[in-house]
Amino acid sequence: MPEVKSTDHYLPPLREDFEGLLGRFQLTESVRYEHFAPIWREMNLSSIHYGIPQSNEKRLFTKQALSSAYPYLLPPYNFQIRVGGLYLLYGLYSSQLAWPREKIWVALKDWDNIQEFIQNAWEGQHLDVVYVYWRLQSGKAFLYSAMPVPLLFEKRRPVPKPQGQELPTERPERVKTFVSLDTNKEMRHIQERYEKMKVTLSLTSTVSATQRDVVKLMQNCAQEYERQQDSKNASKDCADYAVFSEREESSKRAQLLESIKSKSYGLLTEASKSRRHRQVEGEVTSSVPDPYAEYYASGKKRTISLKARTCRALGEEGKRDPTHHWLLSAAENDKAALKRKTQKGRFKW
Image (cartoon, rainbow, N blue to C red; front, side, top):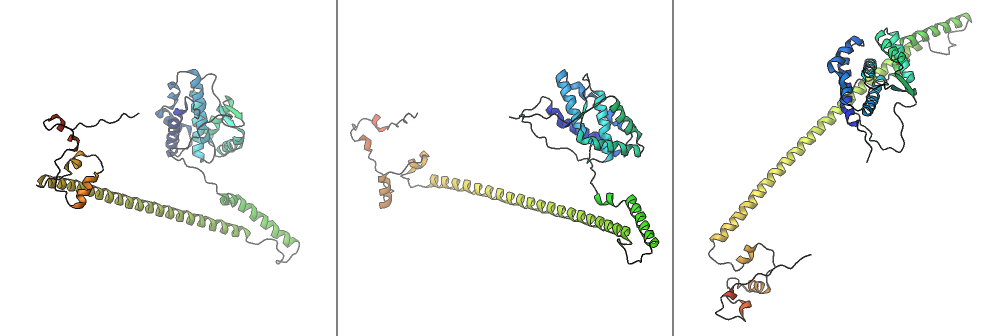
């Protein structure tokens, strides 16, 4: 069986609370800490550390809470969600009850992404983000390691599946990044320098290593690519809707067939019951005695004797033989012998 820690059952609801907090922070359409703090206080997330009195479990829970909030600081989440992830780490680190304080594990592979994120915040004059980061940095809240979680061998742990609401992510757009305003300006400048050099060297216009309108051509290609992507996304949405409608129609058809089968089975059971009642009534009202009435009434599945089969084949079923074959050796005035004793079943191991 996989080994499960005592605090693992707290993680799914904790992640739901984190995603709910970041979802509410996203609705503010702001990256200011003054808009994040009221949501934190309203959800009372600082009290999550009070539920575990044991010191060892308290430290373990704090470490797992910080590791659960750490991925929201990294791509592919958009800038606002990453800012909310930084504020969330700051709140969890500041409100923890373990001492010495549990640190935030930062993998070396994520160092470049975090530095680029802080640089973008500085260029955008988001000073709240820069202040919170340097507050954590100066307080030695980060522990730089090779991996964000400890690597243990010979331990079987269940792989958690991501659940909950989906937070917005940034889709990488390589074409827009390549064909940007700065790139077009730089290429236009290079093209002008190239044309001036041709004029200086008295070269004819036929001598050309590049096209004259290369910048405009690249812009047209980028716009065409964007139109193709939009049409592709629209066709994908239509295909998804068609698949959904087809599944819904097939489910309705299956439900209809199931209801028809259930109704037909109900009619069949009612008909079989009515046939049994008619059979019983016919047996009661018939005046001719049935020689096999005892056999039918016993309810046991026994084979008919050879004599009964012979009488049935010869057409003598109506005649009944009054002779009791087990009384041939008994006295005629012995009435107790008329009662045939039932044989008891053999003992079965």
